[in-house]
Image (cartoon, one colour):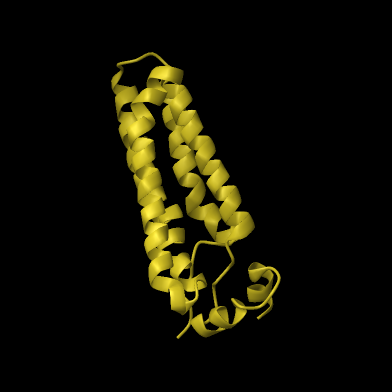
Length: 157
């Protein structure tokens, strides 16, 4: 059985990962304008829904789909649990600090920071997450114990 296609490679991550950062940038720009207009409220709502959509099919897909594929079977359960706890922990940290950040740097500044965090995430995924399209779970498992770059080993297998 082949590995499921994941959004890891640059070609595929460019479809969904940037959407969440773009949604945060739109929110930051909207908050630069005058407050209280109906257009501003609707833009914020649409951008927030867009963020939720793109985060769900972008970075969360990297954690939920690629993670279990590239982790050896012997530690897949604990490693997937750690990835899940980390994802939810970062989500909690952002939720807990959001109001403090808004008070410190304003709404626009906060959402620009969130947009930059998304850019950093995209750069990390593009640089470090291996492409698994067309690779069987068995070939991924064989590439794991080899020395050198896992990404290169998987690409060449």
